Length: 102
Image (cartoon, rainbow, N blue to C red; front, side, top):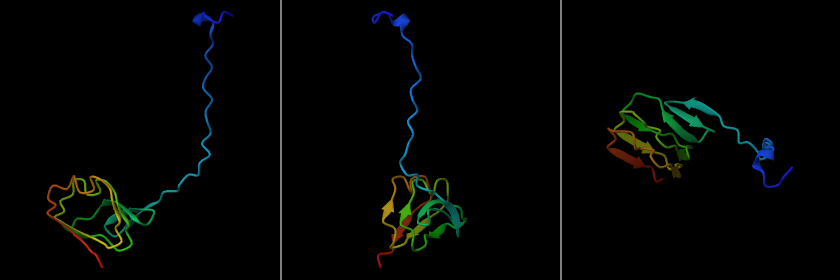
């Protein structure tokens, strides 16, 4: 076989690499009017109230968790330390966000 003739080359499929990194288990459950991932991250509001109070113990608020909801007021717990970008972006009626600092 000639090294310079591409027609003689045989392409072999790439070896699939086996990912050995640990897989983080993700669980989502309904807690009150919220869908909560791993017990501490609000990923969606599923209630109907226009004023919502996120429960203590929630540490993260996911992006777009209010998408399309007609919420006017959100109360965040003192435990909320991460609010992902866009968390309140798709809530057209939202007027007030209150943060518990106790």
